[in-house]
Each structure stands twice: as structure tokens, then as C-alpha cells.
Image (cartoon, rainbow, N blue to C red; front, side, top):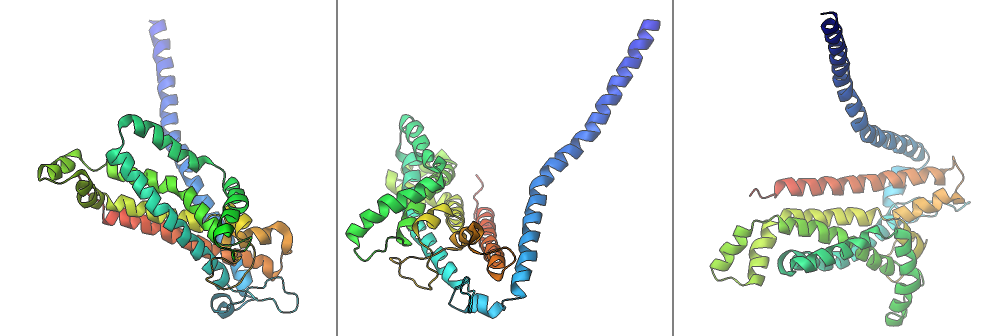
Length: 308
């Protein structure tokens, strides 16, 4: 009898410990889930505070509407986002002109034409590109792609926006191909069989049935690719140069927003100076662009998603 009572006491203690643990687990999980949110809030607050310091010294009109960016000019420094913005958008456009057609056709082949064996071999090979460090891509653009392009375009500068744009497109191909292939593979087989039953060829079925059915996922992959290109740093830092000129000539040296941030943080501008604070103004502009692209991708996925 005494033994059974002691066993009951032990069971109650174990039950009490389990209940305490059950109450503790949700709090721990909430704390872990809050890390990313708090980190984002901390980054945003830092950017906002330091950007405010910048705009106390530089008017909005100069930053957003002037065309000259000379932050280290001792006599009369000027700050304008337009030269950096034009270089960023040019490099992104070039990258997507490379990534979209190659990535989409790769996805179509893997989803609709490749055998299971070929898919198991080719898809990992394509995705290996995503694991290559971006600094390697940067040196590849500077030491290989640019000399090759100079043989074709003699007026191409040693540092230019064309070469890193092309290499960024190569880097983004796995993202576009993988996400688009997932969207194409999610289309039910019955839709393909139904189209072929009406006499459509394989190509017609792919173009007129499968791709339209997966269009939300495909477009979302494009938008995420654009976001990735806008935020790329090392490739453009190494291969695009540091000229802050407002131009749309892709053969000239230009500087993107991310490359400018690297230049300022490398020590060219002293802490507490206007040039130092300008990197936060550029960073928050970049943050807004990237956030807008991600929100657009989510909107497209929800708005045009097909339910099967």
C-alpha cells in the first residue's frame, strides 16, 4: 500500500513537470519566432534614425532630384540617388534579360520534356550555380567576361555595367528555373492529357495549357529574381566600377546602390560625416525597393494562384 502511494506521488510529480513544460514550450517557440521580427525592426529603426540624420544636412530635393553624386568632394559635396539608381536598374534589367529566357526554358525542359533520369542529373547541376559565392562571380565577370566582351565591343570600359549584369543573370538562373519548374510540375497531369486528347501537340500543350496554369508561380519567380538582382553586391562592386555618373550607356563604368554602400563602409568616409550618413539613406532606399519586390511577388502568387 505504501509503495502504491509513493508511486502515485511520483506520477503526480512527473505530470506536474510535464504540465510546466507544456506551458513553457509555447513561450520558447514564440521567442524563437520573434527573433526574425525583432531583427527586422532593429534594422529598420537603425536605418530610419541614421537616415534622419542625413536629411537634416542634405535636402530631399538634392537627394532625389539632382543628378550629381560627389560625396567626397571637399569643397562642395553633392548627394543624389539618381546615378546609383540608374546603375542598379540597368544592371537588373540586363540580368533579367539573361535569367528569364534561359531560366524559363530550362524549367520547361525539366518539367515537360526531360526524362526522370535526366531531371535527377540536370536539376542538381543547375542548382549548383546558386551555391557559388558571389565574389567568385564578380572576379569571373571582371577577368573573363569583360575581356571577351571587349573583343566584341571595343569601346567597352574595363569596368562597366554590361558584364556584371550578364553574370548576375547567370547567377539568378537557378532561382528562376527552380521556382518555375516547381510551378509547372504542380499543374495536374489531367490538364495535359485533356489537351492532348483534343489533338494538341506536346509543345502546344506546354505553351497554351501548362504555362498559363502556372503563370502565378512563374511571374513570382521573375519578381524574386529582380529582387535578388537589385540587392546583389559583390559582382557589381568588383566589375562595374565606381563612377557615379547619371548615364544609360551600358559600356561605361557605373556604381550601383550596393556598391556605393561597400565603398562608404570600407573607410572612404569618416564616421559621423554627411557622406557616412548617406549610406543609410541609400540603404533604406534599397530596403524599400527589395521589400516592394517581395510584396509584389506575394501578391501575384495569391492573386493569380490556381487551385486544383
